[in-house]
Image (tube, rainbow, N blue to C red):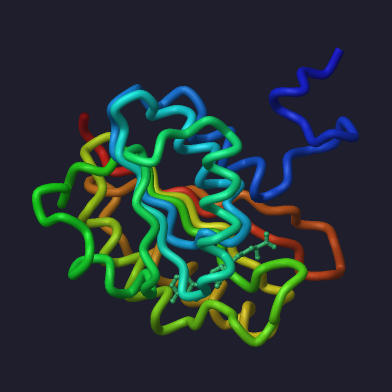
Amino acid sequence: MISPFISSPDGGLPSAVRWSHLLIEGRLRAGDVAVDCTAGNGHDALFLARQIAPGGRLFVFDVQESALASTRARLLEGGIAEEGFSLIHAGHETLAEVLPSELRGGSKVIMFNLGYLPGSDKTVITETAKTMHAIKTALDWLAPGGLLTVVVYPGHEGGAEEAREVAAFAAALPPREIEVQHLRPVNRSAAPPECWVFWRRGG
Ligand code: SAH
């Protein structure tokens, strides 16, 4: 029997989002710090919040109030206490100015799920320059042994450029400090989502 843990609901291989969750699962502990850089509908935020409760600190960024509102509702419905999360109405590119400075180098997991919010205004989409600035900064906020995941959508408007920039950036990172892997379907004609994972050595 195929383990549902490592497959999609139809028994196929994991989607990019699923990969990001599989890679993170089991690495977080109660009391840890985690950051979700793109709240969207709050699925990733709830996934993280559950694993760091009680006592964890989750920071969630989004530029859309509506995304933060649905994330807040999902977290509360999921039984996450108010003091367990901070919703930040700002772009993830401001991460270094907004997060408490003592948490620099202390976040166990940082997630990015790029593109636009499904079922909403497709004009609010992550922008390559801001995304790249945010990813570079976020790596400095990662704890030794911490993971940063990025789900990119090359099929979205502007997504192909974003995917190329993430790839170029990842390839140039010093392997003794950061290990990077890239998970993606290779034999589909469309441009399916891809998962990047960055692991800061140590810990
Ligand atoms: N594409 C994903 C969902 C991504 S949601 C999927 O298909 O499931 C991406 C979120 O990023 C949106 O809610 C959008 O408002 C947010 N966003 C866009 N630019 C941002 C920025 N600079 N900082 C933080 N969030 C941003």
